[in-house]
Image 1: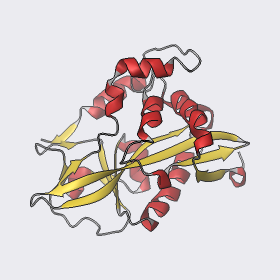
Image 2 (image 1 turned 120 degrees about the horizontal axis):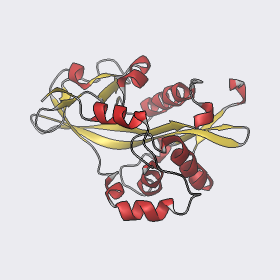
Image 3 (image 1 turned 45 degrees about the vertical axis):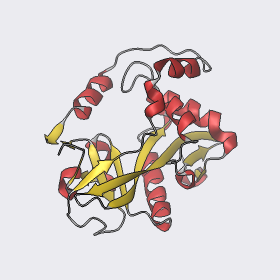
Amino acid sequence: MNKNDLIIRLETENDYRETETLIREAFWNQSFPGADEHYLVHTMRQHRDFVHELAYVIEYGGQLIGCIMYSKAKLVDESGAEKTVLTMGPLCVHPQYQRKGLSRLLLEHTFEQASELGYDVVINFGNPDNYVARGYKSCLRYNICLEGDIFPAPLLVKELHEGALDGRKWIYSPSDIDAACADTEAVARFDSQFPPKEKAWQPSQEEFFIHSHSILRG
């Protein structure tokens, strides 16, 4: 692949179904049998917290092969003061083009765009192995936790500007942008619009379970 032939651009309305198909392909059977991330994206575009200015795709040979999206969330300190931050995700690359540095390109491009929009912190839940090379650090290092003084291992934090976080304790308050996925019947109805795929178990699902249930302190 010649990276000079890659186009990183904002997603347009004409891309929506192709993006959803890409996301379905990339996430199928990764975290659980099947996938719901394509339904998440289908619904999140209408949510008040979705950041349209940071919905980017990678195009190669006229085909969308990667995408990244962001939503707004909050940090709340012990005095009740709030700070608006970004939550990154979903981020994906088509299985045929993975391990070619495309996720890195999407992250680095959108970090720059997010900074220009005035954001200085990005948070996401993910496997640290996939993100620490891009500057993400453990939430524990920034004293950011969930309600109840819980510091999940996969809660990762990226400062877009050094010193954006001053060490005070923050509670991460995510958006409810993924609430629609709790309706499994709606997910199934939406998924039926796509070509059938077999749901199956694979080892990545156990890896996801371990990471998503790991706590550093709580």
